[in-house]
Image (cartoon, rainbow, N blue to C red):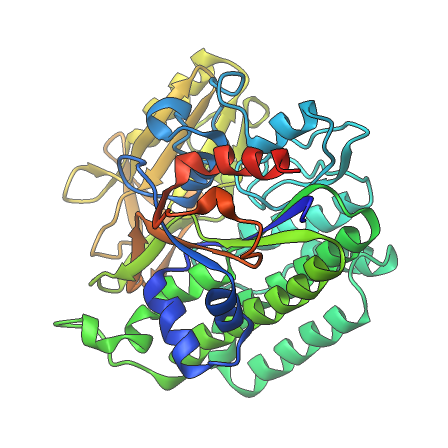
Length: 451
């Protein structure tokens, strides 16, 4: 009988792509998992535009976003005490936990039952447990913030944090070899830049697996977003038949990039299947929601590159504001007071595109007196100047720059998947065909109550 649980969070994997992968790779670990274990379709009841930073809290908190109210990254979670994540409930039941990258898991918990705790890559600080993980989180946060929305060059600060990770043995020789190989491939063929994000799951999983093998917590999670990113951009290349008027032709390289992302996950899942079998674990592979085709076009978009410069141009005090991690096109800002935050919002909304009298920003949410989530407004034209209070100011003087962003060809749907490696011990799922994700924590608790 299993007594422990690993959840491999393969973000946004849909049934359609899972079945396609199994068809072309019938000997894959995902194929073995689906055919020899338990497979469930999942569905999230979250309302509004779906995002993983909402659907994963629903997966773990027993309620959807109508009650937990988590809609954005780095917002205050005002209903945390009413709807805590399952790992907090398990801690109260004296179970050990190990969290690695799960969305909305900041801040880390410190308790003798917490074996390791690395919050997500959009955390407002690099706090992690144990302390040695903070070096990796510094590197992690810098890489993610620099490449939000597009792949960019590697900065000196990222190289420094990377070297720190090598020196404290967080990143080891095998991962170093992968990074060097990736950079060589990028020099040989620029297309390989599109696969740079596929390094991240290697770096993270190597560390996670070491901690898992050392500490063997009762409940543990591992999050990876590498497949979701590939699907967003390259769904068209895998399923061209889904599109009536695609803005580009499908490419074999892009299709192989999606399959490569699944290959990485499949290998990691295989390693976890072996570990689970040897250590009395149950393994779940879950996605919290999925993706399907969406028809969009390329567009010129503004990117914020220098937060201090926009503050200076707007005559706002730099010490009063802090930019928090977010996913493009969002910008999360924290202020030292509600008064100063309202001043910033007013001034940001007064920056407008020339000729059309439209602000470059919208407020996505402000449900806290000191935090705001802003979003860049899409505009078809590229202008060298913006207008602020009827004065034309150069785009670069705001710390902004234009970039081409592929809007993507895959986008979020409520349907996801759950695969479970242990068929015999899952009487708790008997007769269930579609799992409402807000009921997941109920089933986790039932699993731990089994004798």
